[in-house]
Length: 356
Image (cartoon, rainbow, N blue to C red; front, side, top):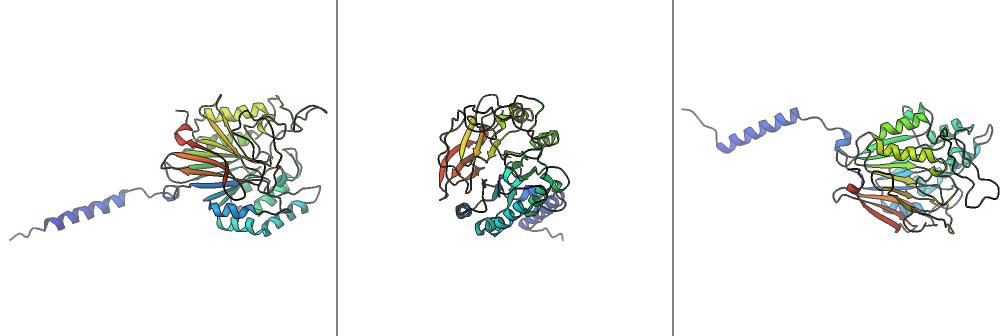
């Protein structure tokens, strides 16, 4: 007599076999596919180690998934044959409780600006950049096998999150390769010491970094944060900014368009004030910039023309945040005050950051 299996048991057996077969054939997910998406990013710049830094409490209350040090992370000078000034600056920063606690509890990415490069407004002709780089890499515990240990400059990039929610962070180096800036004539009007230089031979990034940036922008990602230690879109002042080398600024905008890099948002520091900017002309989609400066270095009386600026500058201690709601399709850029509350804010639909 033939014994027939119970129909429910037979169905379960088939389901089990199918599940085992699917597991065997399914591709093994990579780390980027399995890690959760980032939704809370904070950044800041201009933290002088000799001054109080109460803002770290506000940043820790915000509970970021990632913190980006956007430059002038310490203030120190390099002089002929001496690294003591910059070395001591790092040593003091390491002892500041909030600074140390953030680094111990939150993943960080970092680039430098002039004051942790070793000299105010210094560029590619600074003779002690190798010494500054060694101190920078050691302070940030950059591994021995990291590409930054083997090449010039400190530029870097990383992608976080699963497909469909990928955040790319690109950290530029605006010091190691930058050409000298053109100084204004004595007595010329306007704030700041520099004027735009139309010389097309001058560079902001150097050809190697430009090529690397193009490769990064061609990588797939849904949102991209380009970290520039000096402002990209800001006008109305003669301090350090991309507008001092207008051919290079246009090259950056053309590269974003030419690589079809969707989701670009610019992060910057340096100015000792916070602000938001938006560019609509000559770009494939509205290009936003958030400037956060400084963590404890600020200029309360900051005032300047800002044709691309959204509202006024904020001249007190501040940090910047990028809140990403992947599910609602929106990113919110905020400049936050010492109490962690937003003082400047703009919300942008993710679909608006695409050229179509």
